[in-house]
Image (cartoon, rainbow, N blue to C red; front, top):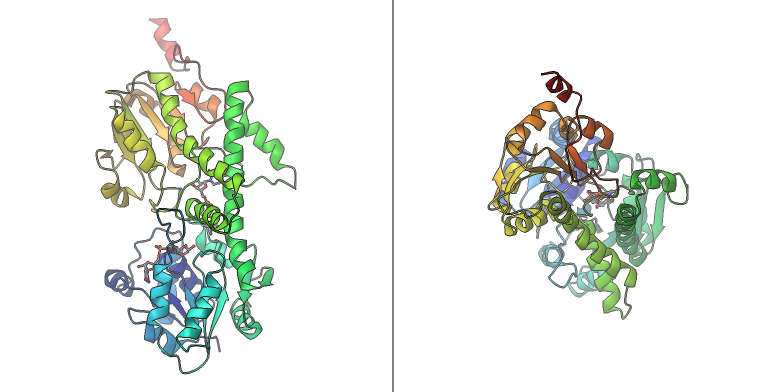
Length: 446
Ligand code: UDX
Ligand code: UDX
C-alpha cells in the first residue's frame, strides 16, 4: 500500500510533485492558501503551462485531493512536501515568510510526521525550522531537506528521471522514510546532513548560472575577435569535464530560480563574512548581458526613437507561461524609454504578460507582431520561431532585421532568406545593404 502524501503549496513544484507521486500510486492531499487556485484545481483546471502536467493530474484525479486546510494534509498523511514560495527580498536574501507561516499553522499531528522541504532555502534553514518546531513542542515532527531540480518546461520528465535525489535529514529514519517514497524512481540517492543538502541545491543553481555567464562572456569576446561562439561551445562541450549543456549564450539567465538562488547564495556568504567574488561577477555579467540586445538594435537602426521593435517570446523560457524575471520585462521598458514602439508576441504567455508589459502592444500572431517592424528580436526560443525567416515575414516587415537573442536560428539560412541577422557571439550581418535573396533575382530581369 503506497504511503499517502501531503503537498503544501500548489505551484509549479508542488503540482508536479503531487501529480508525479499520484501517478506512482500515492494518494496525495495538496494544500494551497489561495482559494481561487484550489477552486480551479478542483474543477480540473491548471493555470500553469507545464507540458504533461494537466494530463497527469486528470489521469490521477481519483488520487489527488485539494484543500485550503493544512489539518487535512496531516490527517491524511505523515509525510508532507513543502513547496511554498521563497522569493528574494530586496537585499537578495530568501524571503521565508511562507515557510514560517506553514510552521505556525502546523496542527499537532497525532503520530510522527515529517516535513520535507522542497522549496529552495538558504543553508541553515533546517536548523532554524528544527528549533522552531521544538520550541512549539513539536519534537515529533521530523524535518528533511529534499531539494527539487525541476526545470520548467520539462518538470514532469525531470521529476520522473532526476539526475539525483538529495535527502538531508536530522533523523536517519526520517531520511529512510522519504527515500522509500522515491523507491520507484531510478536515480542515485545522495543521503546527507541537512545543511549539505540545502547547499547542493544553491550551489547547483549557482554553478549553472556561472556556466551561462561564462559562455556569454566568451560570446562577447567572440564578437570582438571574429570567432563563432557556436563552434567554440561545441568544441568546449565535447570535453567531458565541461559537458555540452548550459553552454548556450543568449540574453542572460532568468526565471523564478536561478537569479534568486544566485543572489541568495551570495547574500548567505556575505552574512557569514565571506565575499563570494565569483557570484558577484556572474550577477553583473548577467545584468549587462540582458541589455546588449539594445546596443545591437542601435548598431543597425541608429536612434530607436519611432522605430517599431517586435519582441518575440515573452515568457522567461519556452514551454512555460512563467513571466517571473523574464528578459522581456527588462527589454520592453528599455526600448520604450528609447522612444521605440514595442510589440510583443508569445504563443502561451500573452495573458500573463499583459499586466506586466504596460505600453507594449501584445499581438496574438507572429505576423501581426512583425508587421511594419524595423526589427524582430528573438527573446524566447519558442519552436514556432523556426518559421520566422519566411518571405511572408520579410515582406511584412519595414526592415527585415532579426536580432537573435538565443542563437536559435541558422545565420546562413536567415541571410539566404533576405534578412539581416545579428546573434550573440556570432559574425553579424554587415550594416550596409541587405543581402541578396534568391527571389530578388527575377527583379533584375525587368
Ligand atoms: C517554489 C519556490 O518558490 C522555489 O523556491 C522552490 O525552489 C520551489 O517551489 P514554485 O513552485 O515555482 O517555486 O512557486 P509558485 O509557483 O509560486 O507556487 C507556490 C505556491 O504556494 C502558490 O500556489 C502559492 O499560492 C502557495 N503558497 C504561498 C502557499 O501555499 N502558502 C503560502 O504561505 C504562500
Ligand atoms: C532551473 C534549474 O535548471 C532547475 O534545476 C532548478 O530546479 C530551477 O531552476 P529553470 O529556471 O526552469 O530551472 O530553467 P533553466 O532551463 O535552468 O533555464 C534557466 C535560465 O537560463 C533561462 O533563462 C534560460 O534561458 C537560461 N539558459 C539556460 C541559458 O541562457 N543558456 C543555457 O545554456 C541554459
